Structures are given as C-alpha cells and as structure tokens.
Length: 314
Image (tube, rainbow, N blue to C red; front, side):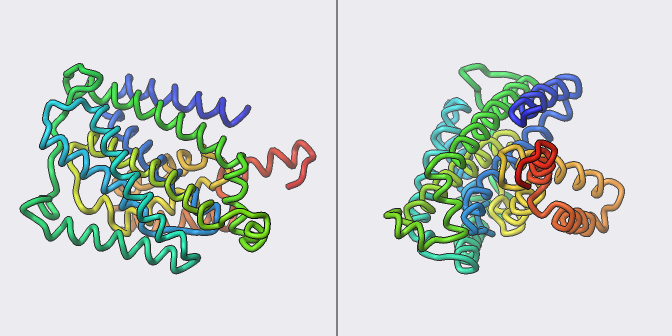
C-alpha cells in the first residue's frame, strides 16, 4: 500500500474516531499540530541543520491569533489563521535571512537564543501578554458560522486534517523537486552546489521559510483549539519535542512527522497516566530504541524494508 493511501486512510480513521469519541477531537487536533510542526523542523534537518528554537514561529503565530482576536472579536477563525500565519511567515523570512548564514551548532543555538528572547519578553510584558498566565482566545465563528464547542471542534478537526494532508502533499512535492534536492545537497556537499551556480544560502532560506509556514499553521490552529496561548508554546522544550517527533518518524516522507506525533502523544499520555514520575524517561527510552533500531526513523525504516523486498538498493 502506498504511503499516500495510508495517509488518507489514517485521516478518515481519525475523523471517525473524533465523531465517535468527542473527547478525542481536541487530542487529535493538537496531535496534528505537533505533526505539522515536526514537518517544519524536518525541512532544515534535511539540509543537516537542526533547530532547537523553531517553536518560536508557532508561538508568534499563536500570539498573533490571540492579539488579533482580542482587537477584532468579530473576525472569523479562518481569517485569524490566514492573518496570523502571514505575519509569522514574514517573521521567519526576515529571521531566516540572517540564520542561513550559519551552519551546524551555530544554526541550532542561534535559533534557540532568539526563541528564548521571545519567550522571556512574553513572560515579562505582563500588562500586554498576560505573562506566564497567557491570553485566552474566545471561540470565533468559523466560515461565518457560530457553533457550540463540540461542533467547533468537529469543524476545526476537519480543517486541520485537510491542512495536514495539503502540507504533507506539498512536502513530498518539494523534497523531490530541484529545490528540495538542492536542500538535501547542502548536507552532503555544499561546495558542489556553489560550483553548480546555486546559492547555498538562498536554497536554505527557501527551506527555512517553508518550515516557518508549517510551524505558523501549527501555532494558529493550536491557539484556536486550546483557547489559550502561553509563552511555553515557544520554549526550548517544545522545540525539543518537535525534534523528538521528527527523529521518531524520519524526514524522508511527510507521513513520518504525523506517525511520530501519534507515537509521541500516545506514549506521553500513557506514561503520564500510569507512570507520572518517569514519563520523560520512557520517552527517552523510546527515542533511543528508534535511533538504534531505525536510525532513519520509523517511516524511513519501512521504506528501506519495502525497497529490499522489491530488490532495489537499501
């Protein structure tokens, strides 16, 4: 079965679960948001650049939703998402122009440093941001319709599924395009790209901005689903969770980010319920097992196994 078909089946299954078990809707939405965020982190990772600060784009987008909804309470939810994603993407484009000049540990630490500054400001400017308590986001209309909480969650889950499928499709198209291949080429031989007449900084900048779009979508939807935004959304621990999910699923297929997010949420919820004191340890053990058994991620390992069965190169 092709991974595209699997993605569609999983999307339909998630929708059915949400309809049959209403309490699962918010969990499903937040899980998809984590998947979108991990998908964004995966793009620069394909170029060998791992960021521990990318959650800042989700945070900026979420706060844009909160501030805009407070200033314009009659704005539709879809308009809030589009507006906030646009603002956060512009921020990623401007910041990316500076970040793409650096590689390796400097790239990761500079992103982390900027995210820590943003989180610190959001926590200190209490009169404007509500500090660590955050800002509540009232439930808006969606597509012009005011609904009860349950109906709103159903609409938002459907929307998030469509966005996830669309972003996954775009991710696949991009990584197999000339730009995507050039981005992956940065990891192996950046000098060769320059000899071919390609600007390594421009190639990485394009990937960085697309990454920012995915993270921004994640943050905006997360804000509407949770109804509250806090500085923790941009913390280094949240960025670390996105990297964790990316490693679990792998970067060679868009499905990896969402499979990784699903495993992360299941392990986290189960461990929190039955082993509250050691749930971080359980997540760490899970990550170590994946790294040892399937260093290319779960989906990468499945693709490798499929190629072996077909007699292709492993």
